[in-house]
Image (cartoon, rainbow, N blue to C red; front, side):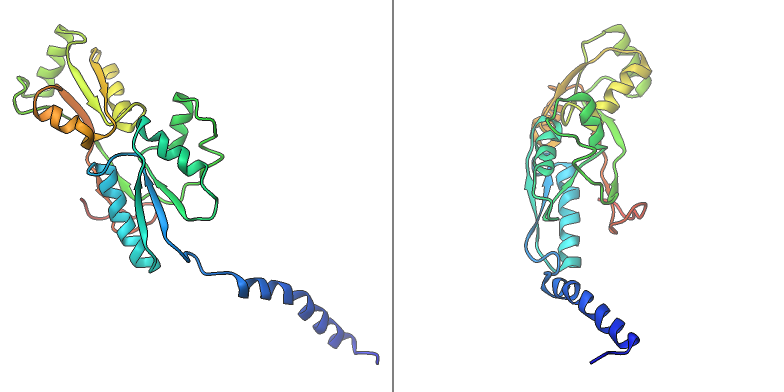
Length: 225
């Protein structure tokens, strides 16, 4: 039987669409299981706290559990490596400060942090602060710089790790102030750096003052933690 041209075209289009429809019907909604959020620092620090706030909110939005997986060490590059080599299925996310591209200039990673990772969203702003113990003799930044210039290399300063944004902030501060200080990297602020600062074993520390977003989205920061 010869079909009218219009009827034939309708059948042809319908037949072509069937495979696509069946694939969509078979596809599972995402996320269909637990999502892990990688944090490159130990529990208790600013980045870990920010990650837990984000994970809690995402769990509510997605109605699926988002768990924190701490992978501290090497200034966050261990977690960065885990994210880069994870299955590209959307179930392994990474929260970090700064840009992954920075690590490519400072370390031999074995992967391309720009090509192998995709940024999703800005979730917070992290201004870096320099803090000193209450027992320190300096009561102003001017006094601190004057002492450092008179005693080059004698001030020990801590950061959460090499290549972290506080470390880079400290190096920039040294250059701008024209001083020399001795860098002491830790595995994170909560991994001994804060206790050593309070005890006076460290003279100064650069650390982020975490301001986290309630809303997830570029440029949509509100609230603080």
